[in-house]
Image (cartoon, rainbow, N blue to C red):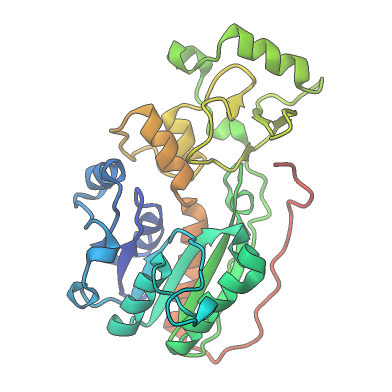
Length: 322
């Protein structure tokens, strides 16, 4: 693989960084505003990320080859001079746009929620793509599911990739291997009592779950109160209730299990309270997905073949719940 430098924006706890460092990339700048996430990041990477990206001068950011960021999706509103949805000011995407404009990296990869494509009837996503094209980038986008990349979590995320040249690029194909919960779960006998639900909650779940549920399974309560016992986890959520996901109907996932569901290695240090690790895991990316995208990006950047029509993504997890 080629040598490259990257920056890690909206870095969280470093899931995207792990994916690109795996292929030898050097991180030359990181930014994250949440102080607990900064602490976790520093403990694992030996550097404290810069704070609020809106207060950082793009000219002071080191030169880099690839810009990386899992930016928050904010509404694009009509404002000021009536540019309407063509005005990106006041959104965090604007900060990415400014850095791309000033630093001109060869490539970028952005990650966001699945429904960014349908946000505001598709206009938000259209504006994002138009602004990236206007900066001179050839842009590719798709939705990838963590289940397709060896992780037992149904987590669909939009991935946007861009290059300064019209080179051939294809998103990674699913592994075609079913991931298993047993590979990430800890032994109940070694888990502290604080993670087990109350008898009241356990009985309530048992009354609603369908019989002959799989073991192991992660139980998910949807908005209507129905309980599904699944052979995979529904997407981790930063702001979900403590009992949003329950392992085998009896306990909450441990901090290590939450990180494993995002593909983090067991060497990753946990230094924050459970409340924060739930938030951090819910806000994070799935590391194996990022690794797969990084591999394809770097292959394209190394070969620089003229672009051809992208291959269709294979779908192996159709009609899944949650």
